[in-house]
Length: 317
Image (tube, rainbow, N blue to C red; front, side, top):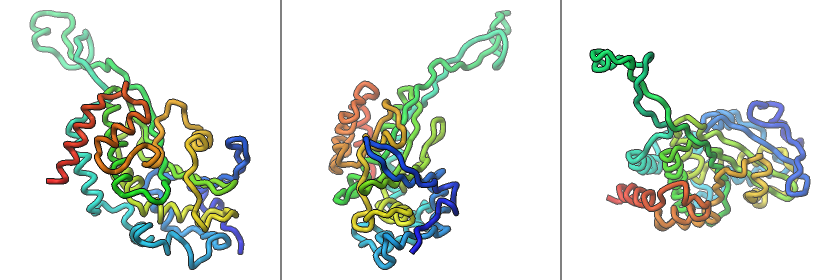
């Protein structure tokens, strides 16, 4: 059988495979780029060619993976990707609404008086003051941070661990924005098998844009996103190694940083277990993450933990 040439058919999403030196070794890298969840959905709906040379037709994990491991069937997961009517997503939104009620803004303004521009101040005008206009001036420009999130995770993670990670990421974004930071979210799936790497980057949130909660939820909480839909990306890659036995392993942080050219100051979110997230108490998990990332000087940890616990309690009433 011939290997698929999806990079020729869909050049806007599939990059031409290339050899990249990483960690002192040469790796063949297969790359994908998506401008959000809708773009990912549209791409998969085109039914790109599957690499049946490496992945036997009757053993595709995206299709035949056990439900208890991979979640709902592939085609259901694909159609649900852009739908909001999901009980889990609605639950997640409730938590976000509670967190948002205690949110803030990255750009802060203060009122000023000037001799031109803005709206007229009646009092200043009547008294003959030269500064008869009122306006707002940005007095604290936001600093910029990027949160890099690895979508892939090993088997054995509970849904509670994955859910808590998504809630914590969102809470950190809001906490950082309240403290004058503009935050970008860079989500990706990077898996490795011997000397081959498959990486896919999903645009979830850009600096200055509002958080797309559905995109965050679908990519970080739903197990089907990784174990059905991202597995399909692995199956359509023209790899040659034995990916079919385990579909690779999540790449180590050091390799990912080098491959994606991430900045040293970027905040890196690895799989839940590597972040100390146990999926029990959301406050304890948040504290573990903050300690792991050394963010104590960036946010008010005790305030955020209290906010998270109160927000989650809403779901238990």
